[in-house]
Length: 116
Image (cartoon, rainbow, N blue to C red; front, side):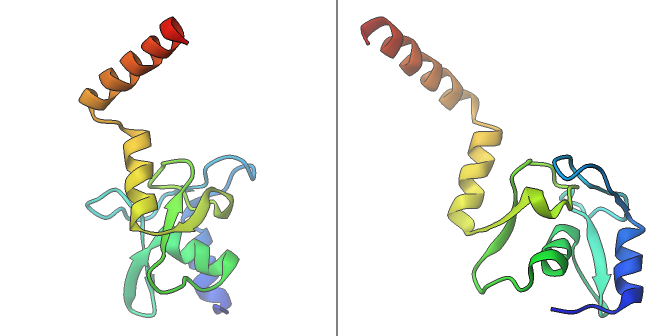
């Protein structure tokens, strides 16, 4: 997928680019859900999805662009990967487990240590 130079310049003016292993923070507008928004051909898309398109190409039907870093403002292509809705839900649970699951998991780990 190719983008004109002006669009790419507009995008990267809104990115605080760091080292390859660090988050590249989006400093443009944020949507109500915390994700960055970028205007592409008179249509607003998520900034991390645009970053994926620029660096990796198309997004297959039914796939989502997910964050390894769990930072909604990150557009670093090294922190992004393709997944489905199930992957997205698992990421959300692992990043912020519900309190009742935290206690259960801690108890299961404690029992395993005691009983081997």
